[in-house]
Image (cartoon, rainbow, N blue to C red; front, side, top):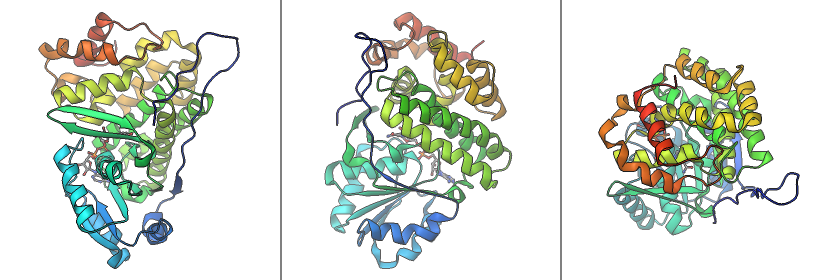
Length: 366
Ligand code: NAD
């Protein structure tokens, strides 16, 4: 599947874009995973299911999937962050040995990513039950890590056929992880305003998603068991990822991808820290988008509003606090410049990228 098509910037006036709508069934509501899982498995024809999750979530997932009985052909509880190639190989072998016909991923982006790695080579359908705000469950993007380098690609075969969003499954996500995962979702939405495949549908989804995340996340961090706040945040996470799935990666995602791969930085934390800097860089060049982002955040100004949200959530705000060494920043500049979309609102060169990463290393925008 090719990358999103960039809107034309020359030619006659008026809106011009290509919007590639993505398929997928969304079942949304607290308590629905427990209630509807068997029916949704059946709907996809799952008779021999491979359940994928992390060791940390194993018990909760066993309880959730108990009702599937003998339909569970095998369980893979060794999901690891960033889908190492050897983990994908183990999961594929398990799927082959047990002749599975459906992949059921329960967990964050890593569990869904592992199922995608299996689907990529087998074509098996995926039913995803996300438990974070990462959003991988509604994108056709897969990722695999080998020798410290993360490779990603787009292929509709990895797009989950059905997603069950159940806020009750997210109440165990600790406040700190909820905060950074939520800001990871905000990053999907904000970048949808300027990423290469932006369309009026993607930015409408993005605007609604920012409003929902800004409303839900403070309540989530204050009380992790607040199902109303959890539901708002999860709704925002879905819409954010849906906008990202269409618009594709912009400068922010490219920077985080390169930094994460090169220095093994934590995914959601890196997004939470870098986003305010990319927004500060681009906002002056896209005043219309900036006003819409500010409005959705309930603020006068987008950059100030995002900073206030991140502070309210107690999110980390400096790359030096998540393991980046200042002396190594220059190592990634060429990779970021090479990957930066040519139509990023602000001009991007080596000096701009160095200044941005250095500022993100030191703390929030001044
Ligand atoms: P993750 O899946 O690695 O989960 C982080 C930790 O949270 C894990 O230890 C997990 O066991 C735990 N966890 C998850 N849900 C929990 C819950 N409800 N309660 C308690 N603990 C819970 O991290 P993530 O941020 O969800 O996903 C990050 C990964 O997803 C990265 O590899 C990233 O590249 C990928 N991703 C891919 C896409 C895409 O479109 N392909 C989009 C976003 C993220």
